[in-house]
Length: 398
Image (cartoon, rainbow, N blue to C red; front, side, top):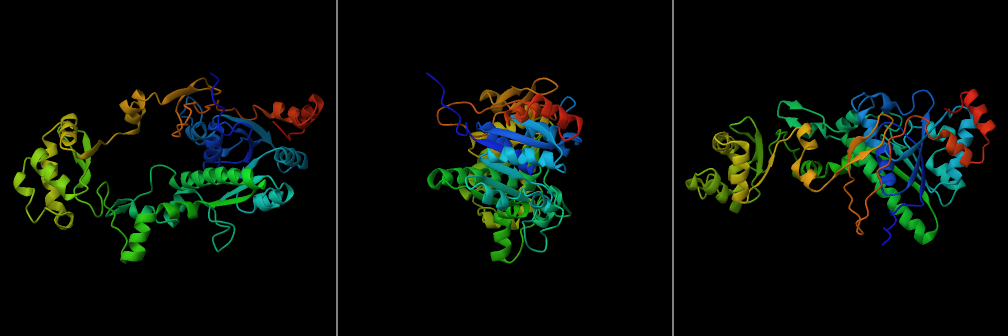
């Protein structure tokens, strides 16, 4: 039986992209079968290539966001390089860019211009703050947008706000760009028309601020920073265990509190004590409740603590570092790891989270070296070997 084709097979994406937001969006499209042509600068390419050398000499950000793409290195300041992009776009279904605000428009590569020239094209502009308003021209990096969107204000301890440990603003924008492209492809299948898609990092992350934002807007006060604890649920925190581990538990209702008190804390008298029997009462006496839970779990090893909590039907988790996640037993049991090719050999990577209905596996192509596909792509546009050699000699392509 022939495997089902991937959902986006036959779709061509051209991306003038850098850093994380656009590359992560287009990687999702590549995973689902789209051909993604990544246009990079000739002098070093996507600057994320230089962030670090942690992936056997390659940058970890770049490896994460760019597998399965064809790399074409062009000088867009040279009219001949820009012409190559225009020719690529003419044959594409989707164009994505996240250049500095105004740069794409100066090159004629903004979504409105391109969609005017190519009515079936879906063109995506990803920016920090959107194309209008007082912040339109402001430089936007992930940490800065985390601050502007309020994420930092609700993350950390009472005395110290902190940024998220992952590029949350970039990822939020990437995922809305990805879903926006899918929606636009569905619409094009019905109407035959493409059109512009606009996503800003601030808009995306502000949407993800849903609960704290609505709490502040409608409740009058922003939720407090509580570290790993929950601002309005108790007990809900990480607790040290006797072997140096940490176990996080979450009591979501008063029935669970009674089970915790009786079966884990071994303090049955606390189960129905009015000082602790309701979540509101436990929040009011957070310090006392946390101290009791900490003493009980602190006498147990992490494995025993998890076993007791699970036997009592209490939601819990181990507090793992990223090295432990790489060896997570659940990921291993579900066979979620694959090797992908790269210029330095095979690299381990997670399967995408989307499991397709027919069971077909998403595509996990190689991480490209800078300009690896320039010649192939230019020849597919009808250029001769002499044409390509001339562009290389003049420094227009790499």
